Length: 218
View 1: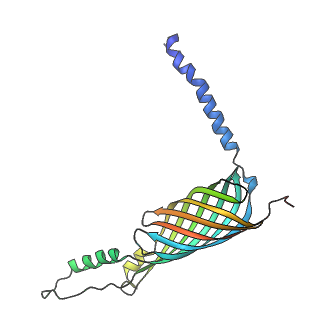
View 2: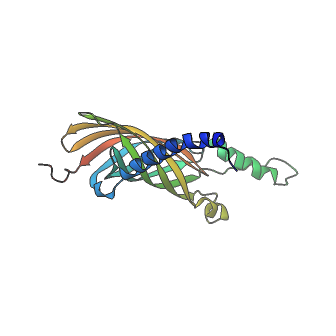
View 3: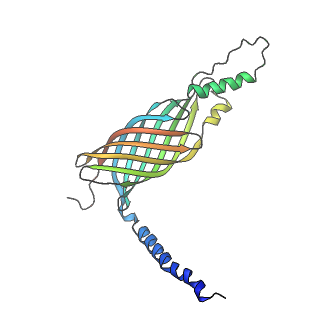
């Protein structure tokens, strides 16, 4: 049986628990589907660096789907990049093939050639906006789905090509800014990091977004 003095720590924690629960409920109440609607569309171009591919150009499309909470917007997007495996990756592959070839003369060569990885990525992000009069910085996190298609003369029609044709999920981190050029037009610049089990990329893109007027706006 608990003594009175043993109940004191428990009783002092009750207001803290109630206060934390109330704050959590208040935060959740700020989220609403009422602000979700097609609010803008943009096009971006830039470059992508990764841990396995050479640096390549990339294009992307972004759709602003409105606010799910105060200053928190939902952004949908897609991008495309066609990168070649880095020389280090190909070198390790060629070295592994040489290690399993038996040749008494030792004068054989293994040349893989170029192997590419076409990647289509779809994104769903929640981005927190820091609005001002004409410049809107933002920071966000989200999820991604990458669809890869491998190609190359040395692997065409083999199980290696099939192994490179994959679909995988990952995580995004974004940071960028939008500058108002006109009432319905923004200049955008963004850094987007994506991590999956097979590929880690960092994309830097810039472009334009056409904004749609808000409901009730004149």
